[in-house]
Image (cartoon, rainbow, N blue to C red; front, top):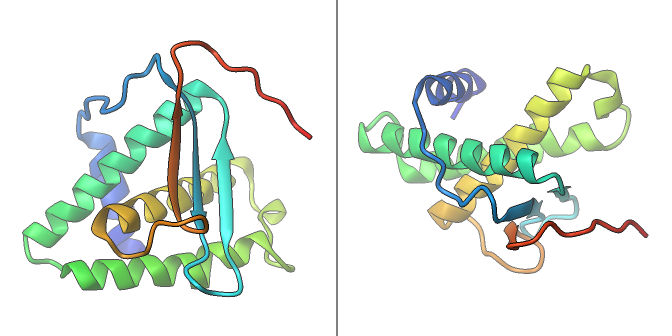
Length: 152
């Protein structure tokens, strides 16, 4: 999927009235990890319950939009998997290291990059495009009570 197609999916998702798929009161944090047997990888975590819910809903919406593209024959499931992996490995992960880092982007661009990483990994996992193990996949933490966050 090209960047232009990706942006179109994001715009389509914003227009769609998506119901929350997760119980908002229980989701405490969300995280994603991607290494896929490569030397470089990425891991992001969000510990704010409201932002976690936004990310979870956004990921599900983008996944649904991507599957609609597959169902309508605009691209195959394998093309989608290959495009997502390419975007992660060649565009997004490099932004987190070296001289092409996120500090050069404004806050809105940084949020977009984070959202793309979350949604790419979520979609890859749902499509079976990567093995889910200790290096790859999404995690969602639920609790009936607000959990304290500790940093070491």
